[in-house]
Image (cartoon, rainbow, N blue to C red):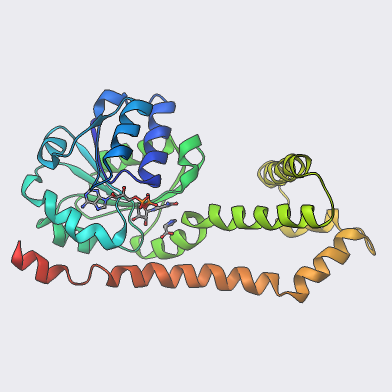
Length: 278
Ligand SMILES: NC(=O)C1=CN([C@@H]2O[C@H](COP(=O)(O)OP(=O)(O)OC[C@H]3O[C@@H](n4cnc5c(N)ncnc54)[C@H](O)[C@@H]3O)[C@@H](O)[C@H]2O)C=CC1
Ligand SMILES: O=C(O)[C@@H]1CCC=N1
């Protein structure tokens, strides 16, 4: 597979490092470009051995699969800049909130596009990714994309309209977990635990709970009940979470993120005007 990546940010790096570490694609078969941060390109070259270029024509000519990995607000400019070089490539977009329809409009043709929503755990082949293909995508291309994302974690194929929900849940999800861990670390300090010891206890607790959920047939609520002795410490702690409306806070968080995914589409809504000018 020859892959071109447009945008060399955190998501691009997570995917590239996953593909290389998993021996799926040789670094020499990956071309990466960025808008202005040349030092990041040089870092990618040194660290992963990929080809870096500022020439988008060259990148498109040398790649069968193009990964779009810039911020949604930069999508118009970036996609319009590759429009003259679009031939038979398959486009994989990881952009939150930017529809297949918009990408095809910006590309100026009904090219095959697969929208994907991975997460940054791709860097260690642990992404939870959902993908949604356009009508133009062949079964072979869908299989190839599925295989590509499976090498960096698990993959679910969904209808495109589900991607806002997926983005809110598993795209942004690692950040919610990290935020929770930050709070646990702060709590550990407040109750006088050594920082290093607290960190290892928290991480093993997280890994153990996650593995329990994976390995057992029990629901999260059942596993929680099994920790919660009547009148014990867990019950006392969870009462506090209830006082602070923990459940409502998480639901509001995920719903707001899904709304935001819809709002991001508006950032590229001006594309018709830009296309006329191109
Ligand atoms: N960070 C995450 O956890 C996830 C991000 N995403 C999506 O991935 C995309 C990238 O996000 P991040 O990597 O976090 O952003 P980032 O800001 O770290 O990277 C974006 C990169 O795109 C480059 N860029 C901007 N305009 C360009 C242009 N015209 N030509 C070439 N390169 C250009 C920038 O220089 C920058 O290096 C976003 O659309 C986001 O919605 C999707 C899933 C998870
Ligand atoms: O925060 C964002 O917009 C991107 C999409 C999912 C994770 N990061």
